[in-house]
Length: 333
Image (cartoon, rainbow, N blue to C red; front, side):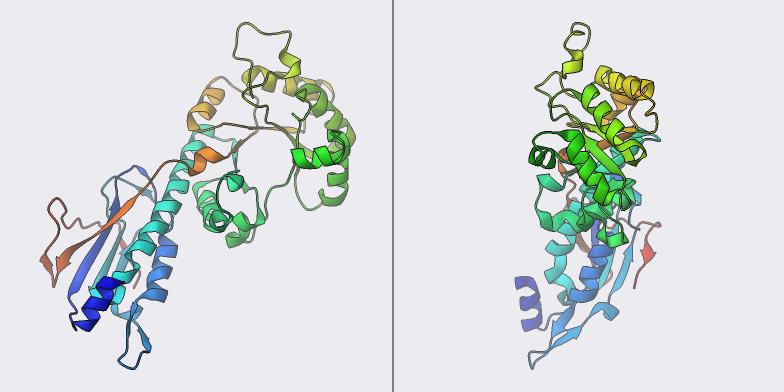
């Protein structure tokens, strides 16, 4: 803001080319938001204290939401009077950084899962205000579902419902009873998925829920803590890592459901999954239908940088930076 105030007060209006890039292989998120920031925020203060919009005076070129991007590749250029948009740099760079981080992370787990579905479950791990845009980025990157209506709001979708541990506790720890009450009210509105680890006996609980709900049950969600061994595995310790959601637990739940005539019930695996763990499960042929992934999808960084590289059409950039034209960019305005 200080730069803008100085330029306007000095009546100094250099025409610049601002160039935006980042340093990772990834996917571009937040570019539509960044352009909206420029459309709404570019402009000048009038001598009488009013505001004249400046978007129409800018030349903006950009890649598209969800495009694969390379390190150092130019993803956005803004050309025009620097005083019109100098104050917006922090806003559009932060938008690109957050959304691209989510999009890159989701794209990695989607690729690792192959034809299996990914559910985007990090809402409880971050501030609620980020849900709308994060959900959109996850959707563009290939996540098949999100956990809240806020995350689905930008494309008119709805959150995916799971019968949670809190609701099960509210029904005295009876998972089948809680699931039945939930399905009675919501099964026509959503795919009903039930957590089955409340008693740390996922095979027994999955069967009880499947028997109680029948065709109304879409899936059971395995979410055993990494510090616990499911009761169904207590007699099988020795040749595999027994804690948490593991391949043998998935196999036992799948076999029990199939043997009881509940082959339609999907298995959702969650709890500490990231791209590498999903890849390991898939390479082992895990009988998982859907992966629920949470905190790993909002971890890491994907920072963007903006540099003035041309002033009045002539090269003028900080040492180490230069104009990098990108033929993939398309004109926005």
